[in-house]
Amino acid sequence: MKILALELSSVQGSIAWLDGERDPFAVSFSNDRKHSGLFFENLQLTSQQFGAPDLIVVGLGPGSHAGVRIAVATAVGLRMASGAKLMGVPSICAIDAEAREYCAIGDARRHSYYFVRVSAGKLIDGPSLHSAGELEAKIRDGPLPVYASESLAQFPQAIVAFPSARRLGELARDQADEISDSQPLEPIYLREPHITTPKASRPSALIS
Image 1 (cartoon, rainbow, N blue to C red):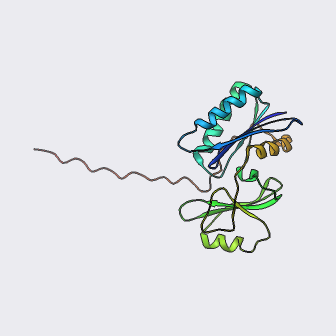
Image 2: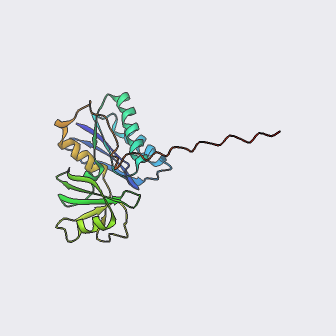
Image 3: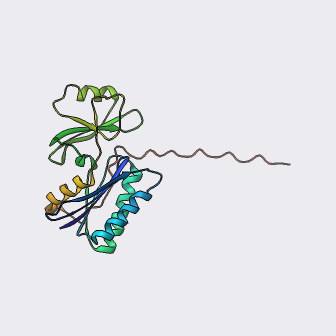
């Protein structure tokens, strides 16, 4: 099976191509949420070199919502052109780490942090939201390594490591029997969207 993997949930984006027993191809690049030019340049080069995939797998986060949405929209477009199957995998299950089982944390904004526990490429706990104090108590002296895709001053024990498109592709290959095209690709949101209702404007004063 020819697999194209797209990962844009962190500051390091990556694209990978897996084809049977051949050595995987993977490329990493800076993922600026305001400029996705490097992603599309590398995707074009990958497509020119390898052609159309049988399966496209996308990292669903949590992380940069803009990056994940770009990856999902791109995958949907490529599917329409190639007829490939689609699969979404939580990005945090694909952190490029040596440990088979680990914890991952991240800044969820609004003075909160998320926590997950991953085993054999699958979520077994979380994502759950915690204050800094709650998370420190949760991971303090834990038996598992802790990873984060950015440096967190509050948690110096966390090892900085990024989700990997190559690892996404490997997980998709191992979980190929679980692929369902009927399941929509949705980014992982840590909380409900925060919507602010605009204040009613006052009527302009009449000029006599």
